[in-house]
Image (tube, rainbow, N blue to C red; front, top):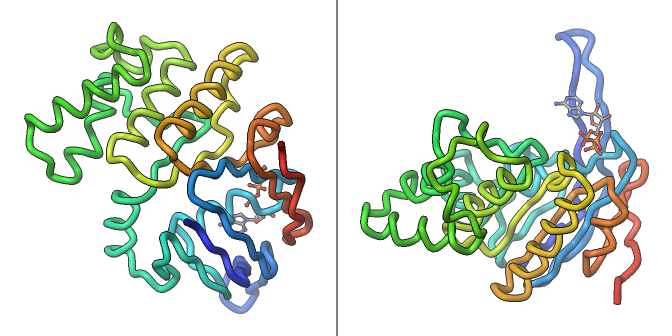
Length: 230
Ligand SMILES: Nc1ncnc2c1ncn2[C@@H]1O[C@H](COP(=O)(O)OP(=O)(O)OP(=O)(O)O)[C@@H](O)[C@H]1O
């Protein structure tokens, strides 16, 4: 599903004449199989978000390649990436990143609008997702009228509405209390089991990492393959 080969990245910072190279990731290799839940862990600044941004095409690697569904996406231009992302990747963020002026329903519907799906199908699909995340009663609430857990469910529904095979999540439970975190983790596991969706999740949280099939650790820019959870 996802194959990372010899991936390295360095940022170039500073003004012309004073440029500095900051190596962040060094020769990263790993594979994620269809239907796996992978956690990426590592200290603050170890390069986890950089890795996720490389996998999502928001930054280009200095070296190495990224294959998603056997397609080499490494040299995609921005236009190709935008289409590919919409079709294949769903995103969940710690801060939910919902559009505040849109209701839960409208936030979930947005990727369908972006893809040019007709209104009848949009309505059917959006309502189906709202039911799936258990927010029927909250469809017409704005994000500010929802709890953190409910907002994260909206963002999961939005991530799933186009049926992407992979969900990339950056600290998905980072803004939630313990109980809501637990509920959300169970929900992610259920989606994974029921729909076979592959999850790649960055986390600081051991509880989140423990729910993954496999934990990948980044240390000083290098990858240490972690434990396989039975
Ligand atoms: N756009 C950028 N330009 C220059 N350096 C950057 C840039 N983005 C990140 N870095 C540097 O790359 C390193 C890795 O950052 P990254 O955000 O990937 O870490 P992280 O593991 O996700 O950290 P955290 O857990 O704190 O979110 C850090 O040293 C950071 O300062």
